[in-house]
Length: 67
Image (cartoon, rainbow, N blue to C red; front, side, top):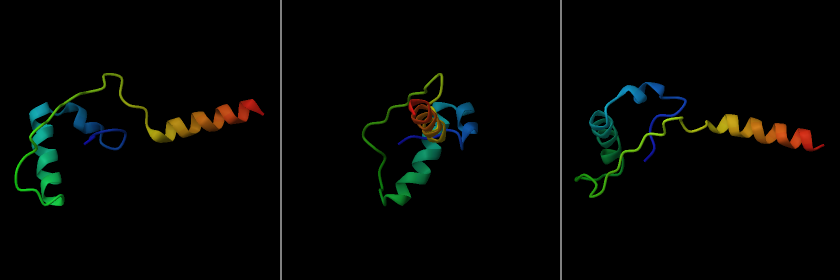
């Protein structure tokens, strides 16, 4: 499960435990699960993950320059 990103920047300020509680409280009922996952891992990308709209603009720019 990925969380945060361009639309949820405020999640970057949360502690790993707080994020875990929030994510599990939302995802477990959606998946109709009654117990927590057996494996959990938390990782932050220090430089962030590029938003898809930025990647798409770069692709269009590269295609334009190739012409």
